[in-house]
Structure formats: C-alpha cells, structure tokens
Amino acid sequence: MKRTRIAILLGLFLLLPSLAQSQPDRGREQFFDKRGPRFQESDLRITNLEMSPDPARAGQRLGFEATVSNRSSYSERMSLFVKDRDEVVAEARDVLVQPGQNRISFPRGDYRLSRGEHCFTVEVDIERSRRPVDLAREFCASKTPQGWSLSGSRVGPFFVEDLEMLPDVARPGQDVRFKVRLRNDGRPLRANIRIQDRDETVVQLSDVPLSRGQGEYQFPSTRYQFQRFDHCFIVIVDVERTPYRIDAAREFCAKPLGWTVK
Image (cartoon, rainbow, N blue to C red):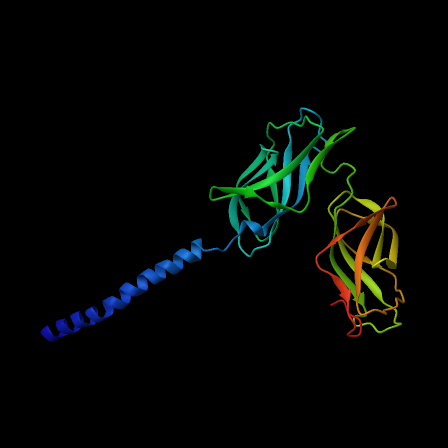
C-alpha cells in the first residue's frame, strides 16, 4: 500500500509541470479563437441605399434600407447608422451581418428633408468603435418635382462583373462572340452597349433594356482583327447619346497565346 501511494505521488509530481504549461496555452488559443483578427471593418461595403418613401415630400418621416456587402468569411453583430453630414438620421442596432449580401432595414425616424440636396453616408459601430463604411457610390437625394429622391433620374452607376470571349482561345480571322455580365445600380432604362478596344468599336448592342441589378448580354459574332501584341476591351453604355464608361472587376485583355481574355 505504501509503495502504491509513493508511485501515485511520484506520477503526479512528474505530470503537474506539463499540465501547468498546457493550460495557459489552451486558454490563450481559445482567447485568440474568439477575439482574434477574424473580421475587419474594411471587409464591409455599402453597395446600395434606398429611401422610403421615394420620392419623399417635405415633412415626411423617412425609412432606409441598405445593401451591405461583407467580403469576409465571418459573421459579426454590429450597429449601423445613416448620416447626413454630422447628423444621424436612422439607425439599426445589434444587427447580424453575414458573409455576402445583407439587406438591412432602418426604422423610420424623426429626420425630415429640407435642403436642396442631402448626401448620406453609413457608419458602423463594432464593440463601441464607430467608423465610416466604404461606399460603392455617393448616395444623394435630389429634389425633383415629386419630392426628394435617391433614384430620381440618375443614370447608373454600372459595373462590369465579367466579360467572356467565345471561342477563347481565338485565332486571327476567326469569328468571335462576346458575353458581358453587367450590373445596373441605378434606375431601369434602355441603352446601347458597346465593347471598345482603345478607340475602335469591336461590337455593339442597340436599344437594350437594362433592368436594375445584374444581367447578362450576348453580343452578335464579329470577325474582329487581332493585330497588336495585346487588345484590352472596355464596355461603354450609351444613354440618350451620352456615353458612360463602366468600372470593371478586372482588366479584360486578350494576349497572343492564340488570343485569350482568361
């Protein structure tokens, strides 16, 4: 019995240092797993802001709805604030923002429109740290005959999410077709869409309906002459004879490996 007790005490004596060392490490791992740099405010972007009612008349109480893009892989609870200059005009408290696109509704408050133009920004508060959120565009309510409007007659903005060429790889003298995935963040309209290589029009679609949101547009085949070392394509939208060059997710340049935009 005495020998058994001695063996147990000796085993505990040898085991205690390793336990003492492992516990802080495990606690530290758990701490950094919960509190580590998993989510960054820079991962947030406001891609759209809507006002209700729109148009709004003087004296009407306003509600807002924002589309918040979370480009991280993590969800986070936060509070969001719509501001006009330094004034908070609407707020949404303790909202869970998940990866991807989130529609956030702001309850109607006491804010009322009065000036000629009101430009709104969005701030986010995470753990009592408040800062502005990156905006895809400026959100300004303009005065129209019907009242103030965030959409009004404003055109765009437009954004090219992808451009494909078929076939890809293409050989000189071969017929090619283009397909563009385009997003319209403004009002629905009809427009001409053309693809340009520097100052040369490659192919065009005429009088195309551009709905709000994302759409795919197939262009007719064209026997475009690939002659230089590279050809970089841009997309232009013509609305009532006014050209609007479009921001793109990346450059779409065909290089002579055959000719490919991939």
